[in-house]
Image (cartoon, rainbow, N blue to C red; front, side, top):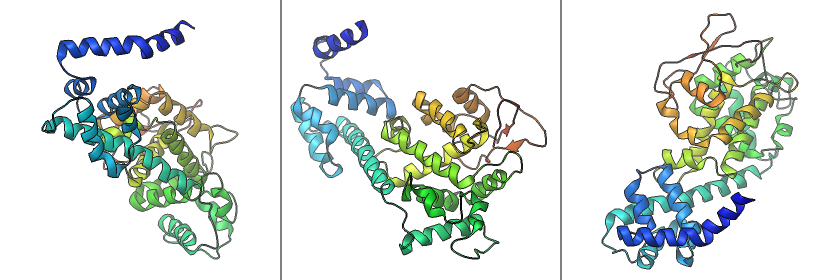
Amino acid sequence: MLVYFWGFLYSNYVRFWLKWILRLLTRKCELQRVFDGSKAGAQRTLSIEHSLASSKNKVLRNAVHVEEAEVEKCVRDVMKEKKIEQKDTGFKTNLHISLLQISGYKKLYLNVENLRKVPYDSDNEEHEEQLIELWNLLMPHENLKARITKQWCDIGFQGDDPKTDFRGMGLLGLVNLVYFSKHYTNEARQILSRSNHPKLGYSYAIVGINLTEMAYSLLKNGALKSHLYNMVSGSPQMDHFHQFYYPITTISKCCCKINDEDPARGGIQKCGEHLAEEPDQLHSFPRKSTISLLDQLFKVPPFRSHSPFTYHAIPASAVFIYDTPPAVCHNTSSSITV
């Protein structure tokens, strides 16, 4: 109760007077102080977003909802309201970048949501072409005998017609699978090969769709802001969302626990919980080794083993995450790495 009361008191009274005092002392508004006191990236953009959204000034509050095409005009309006000279190019450039990131994130979510709402249609030629492309990317040496066939189970679908598996994530689930298989073909085939392990196997395509659901949930609740604001100096695009699918795929492959009753979802839920709890860890991927990253996110000891069931992580050539040599993942009786 005291926490809520303090929050109300701070946002409605204390914050205003604190900003007023700091302005008198520094002769700078809050936006200027944020730009001067932090480097470009998530911390800065999140602070700017909070400052604008919390402002009592309507022009500033509306800035977080501005469309990409109106960002330049919005920057001028904000500078006018805050009495900042238009010739201050440093402030203008920094605010322009921050507003592009904020508006781009909202637009990206809408685009992802629209794609998710598109149901897979077997009568749609483009949908069918993407599905066949997925098969050809993963199984280049084996031809489909028919459109409806048990062969689809070989790449992790549940039945003889994959269209029924896309109901939850719609076309977004297929697009992510195709993007991953097309741009990270070797890694995708490695993971598919491991998914067919006779004892520790799992449904590759179903797990992939569940990973799409996790990435979509993180985007929806704002947990991806830290990652995207650090990775993209401008407006995030659909490709950036697809690229995020690769890190969570490799992380889940290396260190998620697999639920015995439902291997397609058990580990993914655990992975999602940790990423959602510590979203700020997302932007640190390029600076962490695989072992220390897994230790940070999942609180598991860094195993190294040469057991028959030890699998190697994705090579360091995937610079989107790793800049250190590949590590070794290991399974124990309490957790299985895939």
